[in-house]
Amino acid sequence: MKKIIYVLPFLCLMLVSACAGHDDEIADEDKSAETLYNEAYDYLEKTSYQKAAETFDKVEMEHPYSKWSAKSKLMSAYAYYKDEKYDDAIASLDRYIRLHPGNKDVAYAFYLKGVCYYDQIAPSKKEQSATKDAYDSFMQVITMFPNSEYAADAKAKMALIEDHLAGHEMTVGRYYLKNKEYISALNRFSTVSDVYQTTAQIEEALYREVEIYTILGLTKEATKKEEILRRNYPESQWAKLAAQLVARD
Image 1 (cartoon, rainbow, N blue to C red):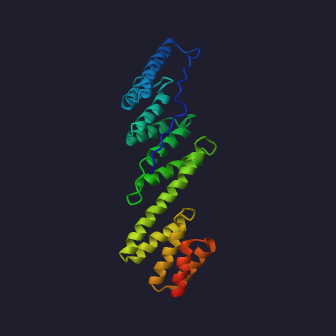
Image 2: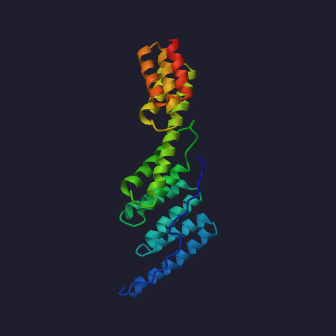
Image 3: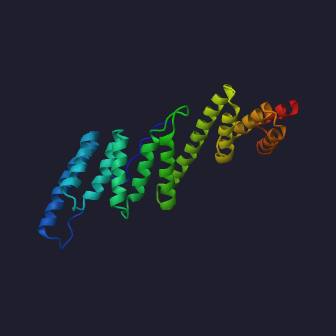
């Protein structure tokens, strides 16, 4: 799938002065953490992503109680993502989500996790674990944060993922059909017609079911699937081919 570059909404530095009432030690720690954070941000701007990630991680390690700590963990994940080190980015995001479940930016953490998987989606002929992980992560975004600014994009990507997964089922199904492994092929095409009904693959999937049922001599099942295809997609070329199969049989 086409790789898309995502921009972190809160990349702009928010330089917040120490709150009144903090003791000098905490104020000094925040100041040191802020300096280190700014250093990491400079690396990020210069596209030195590995160095940026390491420096953001350093903020958390050296100043775990600083107000910059949580933000640095998320920025570290973003830097790893930009560097295409997806496993490191996902590990950082999981840690952020676990330690800061109530943070205002946790919706973005779930979203970025989905994007990390999304950018690793393989062609339909290959194994699709990253595709399914991306789908699950985006599902968490729209379920847990339906009003967030990331929900609409997550939902759109889920639709693309469903079509991709359906394409994978079709590719495998065609392989089985070509090799006359009809039951295995039918299982794949039935998955598309049962689970991925809103995808672009549905018309061919229904036709392939008609084709296999016809080959197996299951006229009643073939006719039923042909009727579904004709009723829902009357102008489809697949519907016309299916009608020819049933009529011929």
